[in-house]
Length: 463
RNA sequence: GCUCCCUUCGUCUAGUGGCCUAGGACGCCGCCCUCUCACGGCGUAAACAGGGGUUCGAGUCCCCUAGGGAGCGCCA
Image 1 (cartoon, rainbow, N blue to C red):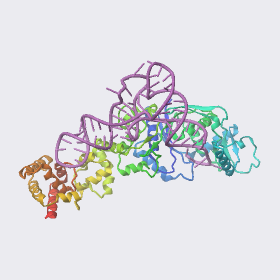
Image 2 (cartoon, rainbow, N blue to C red; image 1 turned 45 degrees about the vertical axis):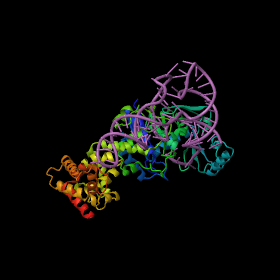
Image 3 (cartoon, rainbow, N blue to C red; image 1 turned 60 degrees about the vertical axis):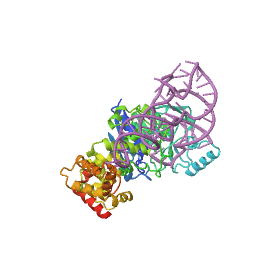
Image 4 (cartoon, rainbow, N blue to C red; image 1 turned 90 degrees about the vertical axis):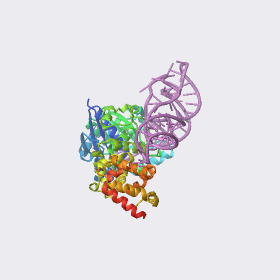
Protein backbone atom coordinates (compact mmCIF):
# COMPACT_ATOMS: atom_id res chain seq x y z
CA UNK A 1 0.00 0.00 0.00
CA UNK A 2 1.32 3.38 -0.95
CA UNK A 3 2.21 5.68 1.92
CA UNK A 4 0.06 8.80 2.11
CA UNK A 5 0.73 11.56 4.62
CA UNK A 6 -0.66 15.02 4.97
CA UNK A 7 -0.06 18.39 6.47
CA UNK A 8 -3.27 20.06 7.58
CA UNK A 9 -2.77 23.56 8.91
CA UNK A 10 -5.57 25.93 9.71
CA UNK A 11 -5.22 29.32 8.03
CA UNK A 12 -5.70 31.42 11.10
CA UNK A 13 -2.31 33.11 11.19
CA UNK A 14 1.24 32.58 10.15
CA UNK A 15 2.92 29.26 9.49
CA UNK A 16 4.95 28.73 12.61
CA UNK A 17 8.11 26.78 13.12
CA UNK A 18 6.46 23.88 14.92
CA UNK A 19 4.02 23.44 12.08
CA UNK A 20 6.83 23.50 9.60
CA UNK A 21 8.66 20.74 11.36
CA UNK A 22 5.54 18.61 11.43
CA UNK A 23 5.13 19.28 7.73
CA UNK A 24 8.77 18.38 7.15
CA UNK A 25 8.43 15.07 8.97
CA UNK A 26 5.27 14.21 7.04
CA UNK A 27 6.87 15.22 3.79
CA UNK A 28 10.05 13.28 4.52
CA UNK A 29 8.18 10.18 5.52
CA UNK A 30 6.11 10.17 2.36
CA UNK A 31 9.17 10.74 0.17
CA UNK A 32 11.14 8.15 2.06
CA UNK A 33 8.65 5.45 1.12
CA UNK A 34 7.82 6.70 -2.33
CA UNK A 35 4.43 7.90 -1.16
CA UNK A 36 2.36 11.02 -1.54
CA UNK A 37 2.34 14.12 0.58
CA UNK A 38 -0.97 15.94 0.67
CA UNK A 39 -1.64 19.51 1.69
CA UNK A 40 -5.01 20.25 3.21
CA UNK A 41 -6.22 23.58 4.48
CA UNK A 42 -8.51 23.26 7.48
CA UNK A 43 -10.55 26.38 7.09
CA UNK A 44 -13.82 25.46 8.74
CA UNK A 45 -13.40 28.13 11.38
CA UNK A 46 -15.08 30.95 9.49
CA UNK A 47 -14.34 33.41 12.24
CA UNK A 48 -10.59 33.12 12.15
CA UNK A 49 -9.66 31.72 8.77
CA UNK A 50 -8.50 34.12 6.10
CA UNK A 51 -7.06 34.08 2.62
CA UNK A 52 -3.92 35.92 3.63
CA UNK A 53 -2.97 33.12 6.01
CA UNK A 54 -3.45 30.62 3.23
CA UNK A 55 -0.98 32.56 1.12
CA UNK A 56 1.47 32.72 4.00
CA UNK A 57 1.29 28.98 4.44
CA UNK A 58 1.70 28.21 0.77
CA UNK A 59 4.52 30.74 0.51
CA UNK A 60 6.32 29.25 3.47
CA UNK A 61 6.03 25.73 2.14
CA UNK A 62 7.33 26.77 -1.24
CA UNK A 63 10.22 28.71 0.22
CA UNK A 64 11.28 25.59 2.11
CA UNK A 65 10.80 23.37 -0.92
CA UNK A 66 8.26 21.24 0.87
CA UNK A 67 6.39 20.37 -2.26
CA UNK A 68 3.07 18.60 -2.03
CA UNK A 69 1.79 15.96 -4.41
CA UNK A 70 -1.90 16.61 -3.98
CA UNK A 71 -3.91 19.60 -2.97
CA UNK A 72 -4.15 22.05 -1.48
CA UNK A 73 -7.59 20.82 -0.56
CA UNK A 74 -9.87 23.21 1.21
CA UNK A 75 -12.32 21.84 3.72
CA UNK A 76 -14.82 24.58 2.97
CA UNK A 77 -15.18 23.06 -0.47
CA UNK A 78 -16.11 19.71 1.03
CA UNK A 79 -19.14 20.80 3.00
CA UNK A 80 -21.56 18.64 1.06
CA UNK A 81 -19.51 15.58 1.78
CA UNK A 82 -19.41 16.29 5.52
CA UNK A 83 -23.13 16.83 5.63
CA UNK A 84 -23.64 13.59 3.83
CA UNK A 85 -21.56 11.69 6.39
CA UNK A 86 -23.31 13.41 9.27
CA UNK A 87 -26.65 12.31 7.84
CA UNK A 88 -25.29 8.81 7.48
CA UNK A 89 -24.32 8.71 11.16
CA UNK A 90 -27.72 10.06 12.11
CA UNK A 91 -29.47 7.46 9.99
CA UNK A 92 -27.40 4.69 11.51
CA UNK A 93 -28.18 5.97 14.99
CA UNK A 94 -24.49 6.63 15.61
CA UNK A 95 -25.12 10.30 16.19
CA UNK A 96 -27.95 12.31 17.69
CA UNK A 97 -29.33 15.79 17.88
CA UNK A 98 -28.56 17.61 21.08
CA UNK A 99 -30.78 20.51 22.10
CA UNK A 100 -28.84 21.52 25.18
CA UNK A 101 -28.23 25.23 25.33
CA UNK A 102 -24.81 26.74 25.66
CA UNK A 103 -25.89 27.99 29.07
CA UNK A 104 -26.72 24.53 30.27
CA UNK A 105 -23.40 23.25 28.96
CA UNK A 106 -21.62 26.06 30.69
CA UNK A 107 -23.33 25.35 34.00
CA UNK A 108 -22.60 21.68 33.66
CA UNK A 109 -18.93 22.35 33.10
CA UNK A 110 -18.70 24.64 36.08
CA UNK A 111 -20.38 22.16 38.38
CA UNK A 112 -18.10 19.39 37.24
CA UNK A 113 -15.06 21.53 37.80
CA UNK A 114 -16.32 22.34 41.28
CA UNK A 115 -16.66 18.63 41.96
CA UNK A 116 -13.11 18.27 40.67
CA UNK A 117 -14.03 15.89 37.95
CA UNK A 118 -13.18 16.11 34.28
CA UNK A 119 -15.78 18.26 32.52
CA UNK A 120 -17.77 16.21 30.02
CA UNK A 121 -21.12 16.35 28.34
CA UNK A 122 -23.50 14.28 30.42
CA UNK A 123 -25.32 12.73 27.50
CA UNK A 124 -28.71 14.18 28.36
CA UNK A 125 -29.96 14.22 24.77
CA UNK A 126 -28.48 10.89 23.94
CA UNK A 127 -31.52 9.14 25.35
CA UNK A 128 -34.14 11.82 25.80
CA UNK A 129 -36.49 12.92 23.08
CA UNK A 130 -36.54 16.64 22.48
CA UNK A 131 -39.27 18.62 24.19
CA UNK A 132 -39.25 21.16 21.42
CA UNK A 133 -37.86 19.94 18.10
CA UNK A 134 -37.91 23.46 16.73
CA UNK A 135 -35.13 24.65 18.94
CA UNK A 136 -31.61 24.84 17.54
CA UNK A 137 -29.54 21.74 17.98
CA UNK A 138 -26.05 20.44 17.46
CA UNK A 139 -25.21 16.93 16.40
CA UNK A 140 -23.20 14.73 18.68
CA UNK A 141 -21.42 11.52 18.00
CA UNK A 142 -22.42 8.57 20.16
CA UNK A 143 -19.10 7.67 21.62
CA UNK A 144 -18.83 4.11 22.97
CA UNK A 145 -19.34 4.15 26.73
CA UNK A 146 -17.53 0.95 27.54
CA UNK A 147 -14.03 -0.30 26.97
CA UNK A 148 -10.98 1.63 25.94
CA UNK A 149 -9.21 2.85 22.86
CA UNK A 150 -5.71 1.52 22.37
CA UNK A 151 -3.38 2.52 19.59
CA UNK A 152 0.27 2.17 18.77
CA UNK A 153 1.66 5.62 18.25
CA UNK A 154 4.65 5.48 15.93
CA UNK A 155 6.66 7.78 18.14
CA UNK A 156 4.99 7.69 21.55
CA UNK A 157 4.39 3.96 21.76
CA UNK A 158 1.20 2.43 23.06
CA UNK A 159 -1.43 4.87 24.23
CA UNK A 160 -4.66 3.80 25.84
CA UNK A 161 -7.59 5.84 27.02
CA UNK A 162 -10.82 4.60 28.55
CA UNK A 163 -13.98 5.47 26.69
CA UNK A 164 -15.40 6.63 30.00
CA UNK A 165 -12.98 9.54 29.75
CA UNK A 166 -14.53 10.64 26.48
CA UNK A 167 -17.84 12.32 25.92
CA UNK A 168 -20.15 12.65 22.95
CA UNK A 169 -18.36 15.19 20.87
CA UNK A 170 -20.15 17.70 18.72
CA UNK A 171 -19.70 16.91 15.05
CA UNK A 172 -21.96 19.63 13.70
CA UNK A 173 -22.62 23.06 15.12
CA UNK A 174 -26.08 24.53 15.44
CA UNK A 175 -25.54 26.30 12.14
CA UNK A 176 -24.95 22.93 10.55
CA UNK A 177 -21.23 23.34 9.90
CA UNK A 178 -19.01 20.39 10.84
CA UNK A 179 -16.37 20.62 13.53
CA UNK A 180 -12.67 19.85 13.45
CA UNK A 181 -12.58 16.38 14.98
CA UNK A 182 -15.17 15.31 12.50
CA UNK A 183 -13.82 16.87 9.31
CA UNK A 184 -10.38 15.51 10.06
CA UNK A 185 -11.75 12.02 10.28
CA UNK A 186 -13.77 12.27 7.09
CA UNK A 187 -10.86 13.78 5.19
CA UNK A 188 -8.27 11.35 6.44
CA UNK A 189 -10.63 8.58 5.45
CA UNK A 190 -11.58 9.99 2.05
CA UNK A 191 -8.03 10.96 1.24
CA UNK A 192 -6.88 7.49 2.26
CA UNK A 193 -4.21 8.64 4.64
CA UNK A 194 -1.98 5.82 5.81
CA UNK A 195 0.02 7.85 8.33
CA UNK A 196 -1.16 10.79 10.33
CA UNK A 197 1.89 12.71 11.51
CA UNK A 198 0.97 15.69 13.65
CA UNK A 199 1.78 17.60 16.81
CA UNK A 200 1.58 15.95 20.21
CA UNK A 201 -1.18 18.37 21.14
CA UNK A 202 -3.47 16.10 19.15
CA UNK A 203 -2.84 12.98 21.21
CA UNK A 204 -5.93 13.57 23.25
CA UNK A 205 -8.06 13.94 20.13
CA UNK A 206 -6.93 10.67 18.69
CA UNK A 207 -9.10 8.23 20.65
CA UNK A 208 -12.29 10.01 19.71
CA UNK A 209 -11.19 10.23 16.10
CA UNK A 210 -10.51 6.52 16.14
CA UNK A 211 -13.98 5.85 17.51
CA UNK A 212 -15.48 8.02 14.81
CA UNK A 213 -13.46 6.32 12.11
CA UNK A 214 -14.56 2.91 13.27
CA UNK A 215 -18.16 4.03 13.39
CA UNK A 216 -17.72 4.86 9.73
CA UNK A 217 -16.35 1.44 9.08
CA UNK A 218 -12.68 2.31 8.65
CA UNK A 219 -9.62 1.11 10.45
CA UNK A 220 -7.49 3.99 11.69
CA UNK A 221 -4.22 4.96 10.00
CA UNK A 222 -0.90 4.87 11.80
CA UNK A 223 -0.62 7.84 14.11
CA UNK A 224 2.66 9.55 14.89
CA UNK A 225 2.56 12.40 17.36
CA UNK A 226 5.68 14.47 17.21
CA UNK A 227 6.71 16.40 20.30
CA UNK A 228 6.18 20.09 20.72
CA UNK A 229 8.83 22.68 20.07
CA UNK A 230 9.62 25.00 22.94
CA UNK A 231 11.21 28.41 22.76
CA UNK A 232 14.74 29.24 23.90
CA UNK A 233 13.69 29.34 27.52
CA UNK A 234 12.00 25.98 27.31
CA UNK A 235 8.60 27.60 27.31
CA UNK A 236 5.73 27.27 24.96
CA UNK A 237 6.31 28.86 21.59
CA UNK A 238 4.77 32.28 21.39
CA UNK A 239 4.76 35.25 19.10
CA UNK A 240 6.69 37.23 21.65
CA UNK A 241 9.88 35.18 21.58
CA UNK A 242 10.72 35.32 17.89
CA UNK A 243 10.07 32.05 16.13
CA UNK A 244 6.85 33.28 14.69
CA UNK A 245 6.32 32.89 10.98
CA UNK A 246 8.88 30.88 9.04
CA UNK A 247 8.90 33.67 6.54
CA UNK A 248 10.38 35.83 9.27
CA UNK A 249 13.40 33.58 9.15
CA UNK A 250 13.61 34.33 5.48
CA UNK A 251 13.46 38.04 6.19
CA UNK A 252 16.14 37.70 8.83
CA UNK A 253 18.46 36.19 6.27
CA UNK A 254 18.27 32.45 6.84
CA UNK A 255 18.55 30.07 3.93
CA UNK A 256 15.80 27.46 3.59
CA UNK A 257 18.48 24.75 3.67
CA UNK A 258 19.56 25.91 7.11
CA UNK A 259 16.04 26.14 8.48
CA UNK A 260 15.19 22.68 7.17
CA UNK A 261 18.42 21.18 8.47
CA UNK A 262 17.93 22.81 11.83
CA UNK A 263 14.36 21.65 12.11
CA UNK A 264 14.97 18.09 11.02
CA UNK A 265 17.45 17.63 13.85
CA UNK A 266 14.96 18.88 16.37
CA UNK A 267 13.56 15.62 17.64
CA UNK A 268 15.12 13.42 15.02
CA UNK A 269 18.62 12.12 14.50
CA UNK A 270 20.64 9.82 12.34
CA UNK A 271 23.64 8.78 14.39
CA UNK A 272 26.04 11.65 14.85
CA UNK A 273 25.27 13.33 11.55
CA UNK A 274 24.43 17.01 11.79
CA UNK A 275 24.38 18.20 8.19
CA UNK A 276 21.57 16.90 6.02
CA UNK A 277 20.59 17.80 2.50
CA UNK A 278 16.97 17.34 1.46
CA UNK A 279 18.04 14.19 -0.37
CA UNK A 280 19.69 12.80 2.72
CA UNK A 281 16.64 13.56 4.81
CA UNK A 282 14.56 11.59 2.37
CA UNK A 283 17.10 8.81 2.34
CA UNK A 284 17.42 8.45 6.11
CA UNK A 285 14.23 9.71 7.68
CA UNK A 286 12.58 7.25 10.02
CA UNK A 287 9.55 8.08 12.09
CA UNK A 288 10.62 5.51 14.66
CA UNK A 289 13.70 7.59 15.34
CA UNK A 290 11.74 10.64 16.35
CA UNK A 291 12.22 11.61 19.96
CA UNK A 292 9.40 11.63 22.46
CA UNK A 293 10.42 14.69 24.43
CA UNK A 294 9.77 18.31 23.51
CA UNK A 295 12.74 20.28 22.17
CA UNK A 296 13.86 23.85 22.78
CA UNK A 297 14.97 26.18 20.06
CA UNK A 298 18.67 26.99 19.89
CA UNK A 299 19.37 30.05 17.74
CA UNK A 300 23.13 29.57 17.96
CA UNK A 301 22.89 26.27 16.21
CA UNK A 302 20.64 27.69 13.53
CA UNK A 303 23.21 30.43 12.99
CA UNK A 304 25.97 27.89 12.70
CA UNK A 305 24.02 25.92 10.13
CA UNK A 306 23.14 29.03 8.20
CA UNK A 307 26.78 30.02 8.04
CA UNK A 308 27.65 26.52 6.93
CA UNK A 309 25.20 26.73 4.05
CA UNK A 310 26.26 30.24 3.07
CA UNK A 311 29.82 28.95 2.91
CA UNK A 312 29.18 25.73 1.06
CA UNK A 313 26.23 26.28 -1.25
CA UNK A 314 26.77 27.49 -4.81
CA UNK A 315 27.73 31.18 -4.53
CA UNK A 316 25.39 32.06 -7.38
CA UNK A 317 22.53 30.54 -5.48
CA UNK A 318 23.55 32.34 -2.29
CA UNK A 319 23.84 35.55 -4.29
CA UNK A 320 20.26 35.23 -5.42
CA UNK A 321 19.07 34.79 -1.86
CA UNK A 322 21.23 37.70 -0.81
CA UNK A 323 19.86 40.14 -3.35
CA UNK A 324 16.78 41.29 -1.43
CA UNK A 325 18.94 42.03 1.59
CA UNK A 326 21.30 44.10 -0.51
CA UNK A 327 18.38 46.00 -1.96
CA UNK A 328 17.14 46.64 1.52
CA UNK A 329 20.40 48.51 2.15
CA UNK A 330 20.33 50.24 -1.22
CA UNK A 331 23.42 48.37 -2.29
CA UNK A 332 23.80 48.02 -6.03
CA UNK A 333 26.16 45.20 -6.96
CA UNK A 334 26.87 46.83 -10.29
CA UNK A 335 28.92 49.39 -8.36
CA UNK A 336 31.56 46.93 -7.31
CA UNK A 337 33.12 43.50 -7.54
CA UNK A 338 31.39 40.28 -8.52
CA UNK A 339 29.07 39.56 -5.61
CA UNK A 340 30.04 35.90 -5.56
CA UNK A 341 33.60 36.90 -4.75
CA UNK A 342 32.33 39.00 -1.88
CA UNK A 343 30.22 36.10 -0.66
CA UNK A 344 33.29 33.90 -0.78
CA UNK A 345 35.07 36.06 1.77
CA UNK A 346 32.13 37.21 3.86
CA UNK A 347 30.11 34.02 4.29
CA UNK A 348 32.48 32.68 6.92
CA UNK A 349 32.19 35.99 8.73
CA UNK A 350 28.42 36.14 8.84
CA UNK A 351 25.61 34.19 10.38
CA UNK A 352 22.84 35.50 8.19
CA UNK A 353 22.40 36.94 4.73
CA UNK A 354 21.30 40.14 6.37
CA UNK A 355 24.62 40.34 8.19
CA UNK A 356 26.49 39.45 5.03
CA UNK A 357 24.73 42.23 3.14
CA UNK A 358 25.64 44.74 5.82
CA UNK A 359 29.27 43.70 5.70
CA UNK A 360 29.41 43.93 1.93
CA UNK A 361 28.52 47.60 1.96
CA UNK A 362 32.12 48.84 1.76
CA UNK A 363 32.62 47.01 -1.52
CA UNK A 364 29.82 48.92 -3.20
CA UNK A 365 29.26 52.17 -1.40
CA UNK A 366 31.58 55.04 -0.59
CA UNK A 367 32.91 55.43 2.91
CA UNK A 368 31.02 58.26 4.48
CA UNK A 369 31.86 57.65 8.07
CA UNK A 370 34.45 55.84 10.13
CA UNK A 371 33.86 53.77 13.24
CA UNK A 372 35.45 54.99 16.48
CA UNK A 373 38.09 52.30 16.27
CA UNK A 374 38.80 53.23 12.67
CA UNK A 375 39.27 56.85 13.68
CA UNK A 376 41.92 55.75 16.13
CA UNK A 377 43.82 54.22 13.23
CA UNK A 378 43.58 57.36 11.17
CA UNK A 379 45.99 59.46 13.16
CA UNK A 380 49.21 61.31 12.49
CA UNK A 381 51.57 58.44 13.25
CA UNK A 382 49.94 56.35 10.56
CA UNK A 383 50.25 58.93 7.82
CA UNK A 384 53.61 57.59 6.77
CA UNK A 385 52.64 53.95 6.18
CA UNK A 386 49.37 55.03 4.64
CA UNK A 387 51.08 57.34 2.19
CA UNK A 388 53.79 54.83 1.41
CA UNK A 389 51.33 52.07 0.67
CA UNK A 390 49.21 54.41 -1.41
CA UNK A 391 52.14 55.40 -3.61
CA UNK A 392 53.15 51.82 -4.26
CA UNK A 393 49.60 50.71 -4.93
CA UNK A 394 49.34 53.49 -7.47
CA UNK A 395 52.16 52.08 -9.50
CA UNK A 396 51.00 48.48 -9.30
CA UNK A 397 50.25 47.13 -12.73
CA UNK A 398 48.76 43.83 -11.70
CA UNK A 399 45.98 44.37 -9.17
CA UNK A 400 45.94 41.01 -7.46
CA UNK A 401 46.05 40.05 -3.86
CA UNK A 402 49.53 38.50 -4.19
CA UNK A 403 51.14 41.65 -5.51
CA UNK A 404 49.12 43.79 -3.13
CA UNK A 405 50.29 41.64 -0.28
CA UNK A 406 53.89 42.05 -1.41
CA UNK A 407 53.50 45.82 -1.38
CA UNK A 408 52.25 45.88 2.18
CA UNK A 409 54.95 43.52 3.39
CA UNK A 410 57.56 45.65 1.69
CA UNK A 411 56.33 48.87 3.26
CA UNK A 412 56.21 47.23 6.66
CA UNK A 413 59.79 46.10 6.31
CA UNK A 414 61.02 49.44 5.12
CA UNK A 415 59.33 51.29 7.93
CA UNK A 416 60.33 48.58 10.37
CA UNK A 417 56.71 48.03 11.35
CA UNK A 418 54.78 44.89 11.98
CA UNK A 419 52.46 43.88 9.20
CA UNK A 420 49.44 44.46 11.36
CA UNK A 421 50.49 48.00 12.14
CA UNK A 422 50.45 48.78 8.44
CA UNK A 423 47.35 46.79 7.60
CA UNK A 424 45.06 48.28 10.21
CA UNK A 425 45.26 51.92 9.09
CA UNK A 426 44.68 50.81 5.52
CA UNK A 427 41.74 48.75 6.59
CA UNK A 428 40.32 51.72 8.42
CA UNK A 429 40.81 53.89 5.35
CA UNK A 430 39.26 51.57 2.82
CA UNK A 431 36.46 50.00 4.85
CA UNK A 432 35.77 52.60 7.51
CA UNK A 433 36.20 49.94 10.16
CA UNK A 434 38.86 47.80 11.74
CA UNK A 435 37.29 44.48 10.82
CA UNK A 436 37.30 43.01 7.35
CA UNK A 437 38.55 40.06 5.35
CA UNK A 438 42.35 39.90 4.86
CA UNK A 439 43.64 43.29 3.78
CA UNK A 440 45.07 42.12 0.45
CA UNK A 441 41.82 40.48 -0.64
CA UNK A 442 39.82 43.43 0.57
CA UNK A 443 41.96 45.81 -1.47
CA UNK A 444 41.73 43.59 -4.51
CA UNK A 445 37.96 43.47 -4.34
CA UNK A 446 37.52 47.17 -3.71
CA UNK A 447 39.65 47.88 -6.74
CA UNK A 448 42.74 49.93 -7.45
CA UNK A 449 41.33 53.35 -8.13
CA UNK A 450 38.77 53.17 -5.42
CA UNK A 451 41.28 51.94 -2.84
CA UNK A 452 43.68 54.73 -3.64
CA UNK A 453 40.92 57.32 -3.54
CA UNK A 454 39.87 56.10 -0.17
CA UNK A 455 43.35 56.19 1.24
CA UNK A 456 43.69 59.74 -0.04
CA UNK A 457 40.36 60.63 1.49
CA UNK A 458 41.53 59.22 4.79
CA UNK A 459 44.83 61.06 4.61
CA UNK A 460 43.02 64.32 4.04
CA UNK A 461 40.97 63.59 7.06
CA UNK A 462 44.04 63.09 9.22
CA UNK A 463 45.87 66.18 8.05
C1' G B 1 -9.17 19.36 39.39
C1' C B 2 -9.32 15.06 36.00
C1' U B 3 -7.05 12.33 31.79
C1' C B 4 -2.93 11.58 28.61
C1' C B 5 2.23 12.43 27.48
C1' C B 6 7.37 13.62 28.58
C1' U B 7 12.38 13.79 31.69
C1' U B 8 20.79 12.01 29.26
C1' C B 9 25.86 17.97 29.39
C1' G B 10 23.21 25.20 29.08
C1' U B 11 20.79 23.49 24.15
C1' C B 12 19.99 19.58 20.11
C1' U B 13 21.04 14.59 20.62
C1' A B 14 23.76 9.11 20.59
C1' G B 15 22.49 5.17 23.76
C1' U B 16 17.11 -0.32 22.63
C1' G B 17 20.43 -4.81 29.63
C1' G B 18 27.17 -5.82 29.70
C1' C B 19 30.79 -2.42 23.85
C1' C B 20 29.38 3.69 29.01
C1' U B 21 35.60 5.61 32.37
C1' A B 22 28.08 7.96 29.07
C1' G B 23 29.73 9.52 22.55
C1' G B 24 28.78 13.62 18.86
C1' A B 25 27.05 18.69 17.61
C1' C B 26 26.00 23.97 18.87
C1' G B 27 27.52 27.25 22.56
C1' C B 28 31.29 28.37 26.43
C1' C B 29 36.52 28.46 27.87
C1' G B 30 41.81 27.56 26.47
C1' C B 31 45.71 26.70 22.81
C1' C B 32 47.45 26.76 17.61
C1' C B 33 47.03 29.38 12.89
C1' U B 34 47.01 34.86 12.02
C1' C B 35 47.42 41.86 9.41
C1' U B 36 41.85 42.68 12.14
C1' C B 37 37.47 39.70 12.31
C1' A B 38 36.42 35.10 11.05
C1' C B 39 37.24 30.13 9.13
C1' G B 40 39.98 25.86 10.28
C1' G B 41 42.72 22.54 13.73
C1' C B 42 43.51 20.78 18.71
C1' G B 43 41.95 20.55 23.70
C1' U B 44 39.10 21.51 28.58
C1' A B 45 34.76 21.93 31.52
C1' A B 46 29.82 20.13 31.22
C1' A B 47 24.44 15.33 31.79
C1' C B 48 21.66 9.84 32.94
C1' A B 49 15.62 14.53 37.82
C1' G B 50 15.16 11.76 42.88
C1' G B 51 13.89 7.20 45.32
C1' G B 52 12.63 2.19 45.29
C1' G B 53 12.54 -2.46 42.78
C1' U B 54 13.71 -6.55 38.70
C1' U B 55 18.59 -8.60 37.27
C1' C B 56 24.88 -11.61 38.10
C1' G B 57 24.65 -6.62 35.79
C1' A B 58 20.31 -0.62 34.57
C1' G B 59 21.11 5.58 31.32
C1' U B 60 18.55 1.30 29.09
C1' C B 61 12.88 -2.76 32.14
C1' C B 62 8.91 -1.88 36.25
C1' C B 63 6.81 1.25 40.28
C1' C B 64 6.52 5.76 43.13
C1' U B 65 7.75 10.93 43.82
C1' A B 66 9.10 15.54 41.77
C1' G B 67 9.23 18.72 37.65
C1' G B 68 7.47 19.96 32.71
C1' G B 69 3.85 19.74 28.68
C1' A B 70 -0.89 18.78 26.38
C1' G B 71 -6.12 18.03 26.39
C1' C B 72 -10.77 18.59 28.94
C1' G B 73 -14.79 24.42 23.28
C1' C B 74 -20.96 24.83 18.96
C1' C B 75 -11.33 26.47 18.02
C1' A B 76 -8.20 23.81 14.89
